[in-house]
Amino acid sequence: MPFEIKENNTGYLIPFNISDIPFTPKRCFFVTNNNLGDTRGNHAHINESHFLICLGGKIKLIKENKDGVEEIILTKGQTLHQKELEWMQLEYIENNSSILVFADELYTEENYIREYKKFKEIVCF
Image (cartoon, rainbow, N blue to C red; front, side, top):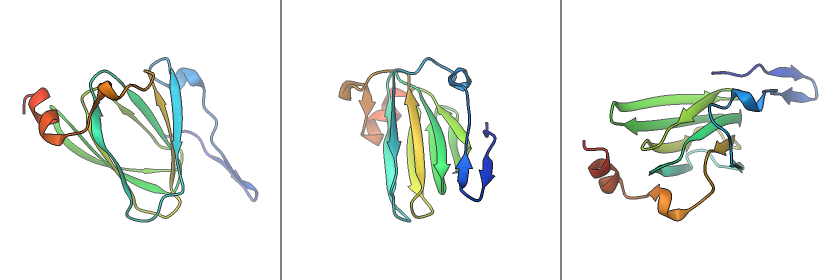
């Protein structure tokens, strides 16, 4: 779901209502100041959803779940709902791309699946 972008000569504004997020957020974080080709993510969550909003630049997302693999390009104002048990890799395909992430759970390392082989076992590929 893309958000409306209001742009003028002083920059751009992306307004949205918290109710647009498909869950009640418990935390949020920014990922910014990335270089072309940087990758992040490479993990899944056992019991956590994320709502990603691209604030600027271009980010390629490779999302994998029990239904297969999907490649998505996010640009400013575009969003993605990452659900539990979805492996996600983010590749920054423009310098200084930024993303804002809302999560429905507080951070706990135990909620992360960081080994791809373990992810495949859990989701029964």
